[in-house]
Image 1 (cartoon, rainbow, N blue to C red):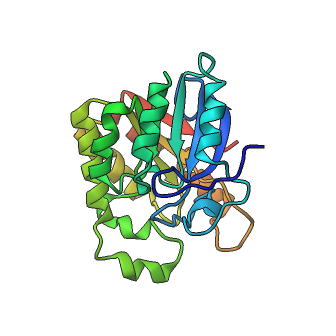
Image 2 (image 1 turned 60 degrees about the horizontal axis):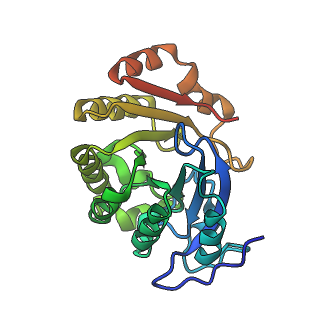
Length: 254
């Protein structure tokens, strides 16, 4: 077991690590570093335990131990993926990314796009990005909290505009990337999905993935299995979206 995380402002706070994956950076053998903390509280999040950056994560590794682990994987792994939580919430991620790149790894980033300024700063060191598109840009406040009382507090904050700027920044830089949307019926309707796809296509996005929402438990507040599956069994819907992208990916829950 890796030593617990004892990070500070200069050291990345880690929420966990996956030592090997072929899924999080397509066509690359990678390790995934989950960064502690997120600015949003999406209702379908499967990493709830690392959202609150002020709440310690049990058994979370230290950044030093992550580097020690990666030093033993040089020449065996292609890349390191910074995921979360939200990696760009922590200023220390910039130096962490550079450190990993200097070790000879490619660096991939999963981000919700909330901080286009920091994204622009790290882009020169990033080989691939998975950009989460939660919903229609104008409706973002509905997507970023499972607590309805939180929505009223954030309606004045144009998260959708920030995410759109992040997308434009990636497109301008020419970095390899995909956009992806997790299809939680509480957040995205079929009509909204069509609008998302059309907007992304018009902006020049080439790779778009739709991801099936996986239930976190069996609480009655969650959508039914039929509602969840309806996006993927609607042949007319999929036939309308698929031609918009050279690469259209359907990720079903396992």
